[in-house]
Image: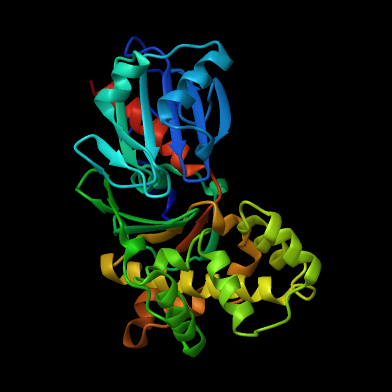
Length: 353
């Protein structure tokens, strides 16, 4: 992680009073599986929501319906909103990658009767929060030797795979989103090459997201089962067949009973290895000498498997550039960085206004 004096951006209102600027802020982390909505008072800061609720994203036809329900259930009102979304945001408009929603700032502002609505990519929100994360919100995988003001990389496997980076402009970090999770998957060994062939037959284009994400875990499991990696547990197979989302079952079984469910354990090991390799790829592309941050919902759920070299070996295994990777700090983000980032972004914009 960065030294304490490098963690903070210039004071722009985090956990400080922004009196008279706006009423309540709705901040939302809009994911392909779940959505977190919260209300923030300007004098409470980005880590102290007045009220917060979680919703199943696919249960709603549109974000506006969810927000209306949230405000009705909480009996609150708001003036402004900032939502991070899983998909690219261009000119205030977003088509979500893993939901059939098309959102635009002006339409949401009008539909919800708000003064202003802001949309930003979910990885940009996470990246926006990263420089202001606290030490207790991070788990260190590699201390490294951070370069002051060096570029930062963020890779976040959740339902999909998000990537972002930050660069120093002389006074603060600037968060930049990307869609690197949809770049071509590069197998790291013979078994991963067979996985690529399997997924190529299924999908055509094989992106890293098809492997290194929550939605990718069942793909790995199916490949291993069909390749005869191990026998599938009959009772567990019945549970999977009945589940709407197989990922939580596979992850739980692989983490808590690896001996009893070797297919699940092997799927998690491949996931971790691919995550390490792609995190290293991204770290090289942006020369993340300031540090690499693993965010999203998946890394904390497989935290125990990220140690013992399972992640760091493929992360640093870059031939002649291995010493460069070994010097880069690597941290797992334990905080809900997307929601914190959306709240920070919203509160900062109104302070600037």
